[in-house]
Length: 415
Ligand SMILES: Cc1ncc(COP(=O)(O)O)c(C=O)c1O
Picture 1 (cartoon, rainbow, N blue to C red):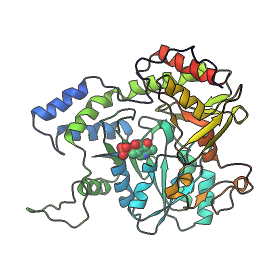
Picture 2 (cartoon, rainbow, N blue to C red):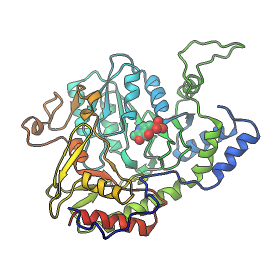
Picture 3 (cartoon, helix red, strand yellow):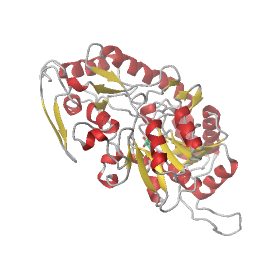
Picture 4 (tube, rainbow, N blue to C red):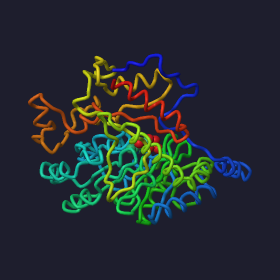
């Protein structure tokens, strides 16, 4: 329960969750596009960011697009997902991971989350194949910059001849067994949205080792023009190509990816040290095999240290208790001091739009609910993390002093 009303001074300058961190070269490459009048969806910046991204990530082709969502949409089309196809999708993620499945008429079947990395649970995935043996596509995300259990997920997919679309929107630069995320799927995607670890203000890329896929994605993204003297179309087209001006921003940002990761890691480590003795843990990762990009630092409150806390569809309330707290109390208290946190992504099976879709858990009966849930005494993993977790201010421009105050505010919530 927060007991330090007058102890902290509100931040004069807001402490943000994650905002763009610019360096100067971004403006130089945007200006270059302007000066050369390459202000459209062709130009040197686009070619160069495709080259830089593919080289960094270690894939053969990176296709520059207007957003990560556009990249996911083209990935879904390339993978051949069609009307009525069931697709196994991450449950605890941003809805953009799987909305493109629905754009194409596919039906997401949500797979519960594991506790070790907060990503798609390979055990639940295996179980999903027992329940739905005909499924041929998986869409999984690496949440908050932490790689999922890629070997296990790949083994399950291969056993059932399924294709993986890997959503690395949040995990650019993160590695699993030394390999970059975005390369574990048959098709990968990244995002340069404004809050990502490097940004173009917007933008995304489709990653593949298959030249035919890359060529198709490029063609579809520019309205599917055929090679003819007039506008000739054999396929449905989209206006999904990246602008050369946006590519200029990304061209200036990409060289700073490793620096941004190091600074994000320092933020994570400072929280971890600062929360010593509190009944909380930071978002977990496989310390032996993976190196996250630490995009967002998150914390999870021990069950025993949760005060009474309920969430409706759009509102939450809690009852303060000595020695306990909850995500709503912490987020509201941070906001009162002019600092921005965020709830954990609300799982898709809890969303009104997807509530009737199947949801597979390790413990469940295959009808979408865990045994514990059915008996009314517990919740699935995704719901549990959503209930007890939150994203902390993770902006790399936050000063050490500001972060120490954030830590002190969180600590005060547990007094
Ligand atoms: C996991 C995840 N997938 C997909 C997206 C979509 O990317 P974009 O905003 O570039 O469309 C985002 C972020 O916005 C994301 O966090």
